[in-house]
Image 1 (spheres, rainbow, N blue to C red):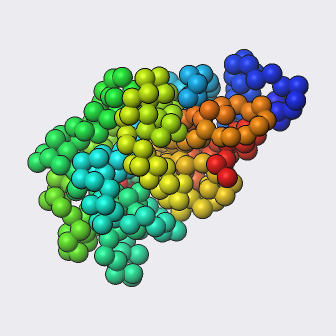
Image 2 (image 1 turned 90 degrees about the vertical axis):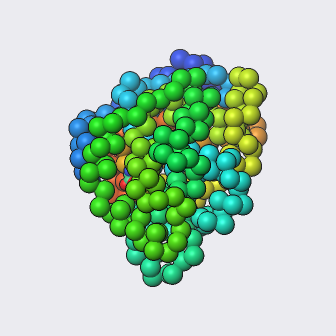
Amino acid sequence: MVQGAINQNTKLTKDWLQNYVDDWVKFYWKHTKEGELASYIPHLMQADKSHLGISIMGINGVTIESGDVDIPFTIQSISKVFTFIVACMERGVSYVLDRVDVEPTGAAFNSIMHLEMKQIKKPFNPFVNAGAITVTSLLNGKTSDEKLEPIFELLENILGYCPSLNMDVFKSESETSIRNRAIGYYLVETGNLESELDLTLETYFKQCSIEISLKDLAHIGTILANDGKDPKTELEIIPKQVARLAKSLMLTCGMYDASGKFAAYVGIPAKSGVSGGIVAVAPPRARHEDLPFLEGCGIGVYGPALDKQGNSIAGIRLLRHIAKQWDLSIF
Ligand code: GLU
């Protein structure tokens, strides 16, 4: 028997929250069978399709974890949030937004069609590959390691340790990424890249291969939920304007070409990656009812079996259920 909706007799203890999340992870686990692993990066095929886990970290410090929470995974497209944040911090928001737009595309993340058909001056948004590769080219530095250093610093400031690169995933993607090279050449021709193509792509593949845990994702979500400040120390890690911009892009463009549905049915900013990770952000809510995590929380989900758009098939259902029952929506 899975736990039902919250009513006035529900006592929102940590045990209640833990049992609730445990029940629903078990319930949605069956959907992992309906998805597929990302195969275009061969190394990602080594993931176990049946994994599903969630970590929820409140701004109030309460953490609930359930399912497969100890599997490290590469962040893939979730890295696009960090490169965008760092580029805005290094170059300034208006410099970056002069070079990449903030419009959803409704097309696949690695689509080339729109670039040519619409004769755009700048890629649609920083979370489609054309936009992300452009943003990576804006990062300061003459080598990929130099370009990535502030991203690792940002992650270390949040997590308290410096994550590593999964070199197997990096090599696997560099050896096979024909589509990203095609996008890259197109961007060279249109004059959108500020650093040389091979350097930009090497940096981009490396940023996608940063390996973290579910708890890390939830922790990052918490900082964004708190407008860029560490809730424990109240120190600013990300400027408020940049954190808010990143969240608005997550809401409108973060879940591939299912971003509209996710905004409508789940209603919180989120970004997913093809390794099966999702980082979601529930900002503080001014609700009167007794609901979990009213102060806001970050949520990390991992489930490498993906739907057609590239989102974790069971992870999305789990997130949607919890967001609905706990009224996490920002609307
Ligand atoms: N490294 C992947 C690519 O560029 C990331 C894709 C994703 O997670 O959406 O194709």
